[in-house]
Image 1 (cartoon, rainbow, N blue to C red):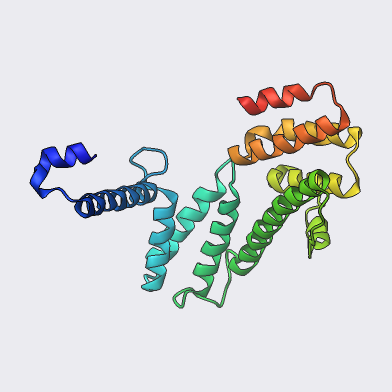
Image 2: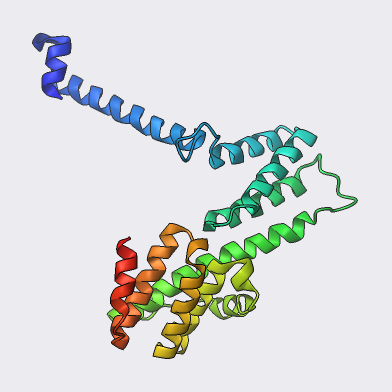
Length: 240
């Protein structure tokens, strides 16, 4: 970089501080580019990114844009609900959208359809439960590996909330993490391991990539601790 600077501006113009300022400015431009790229497009297409759409809805709500705001909010709600693979952030996004629509001063309150308050609460619960289960799974895994103990307040309430057997079809990520944490709490057994692995294999395509990898690591560690012969298959899947 120093050679490029001297060739562009001349040796006489070079100082360490000028080069440092130039590099700092370039870094800031790169940072701005990365943020704007994420806002405008998440997958390299011309389609506006999700974060851009969320900010547009929030901006319209702040300006009391009335029906325009509600239409754009509902459009994003429908788009998020239609995704076959839901990230944890999707549940938070849905909670925020329903919250923003209901509490916007231009939203009629005499008839609540769709039921924004209930939907906001439902997605808030799902977001909290899934995040809590993710943390609990990691903490329970660390307890087994490092002989430490963690406090997990409200975990029992989360386990009860996610015990519904229908959850596996409506919200597979919540159901799988709930089964994983339950296995850690009750003690890891080979029967429980294979039951969890069967559920994981069945719903693998409906899980976000980061959770696919994270859950595979839990399965691999459990399999190793149990001496399961086919645990290498999990490792091969993780490598993919």
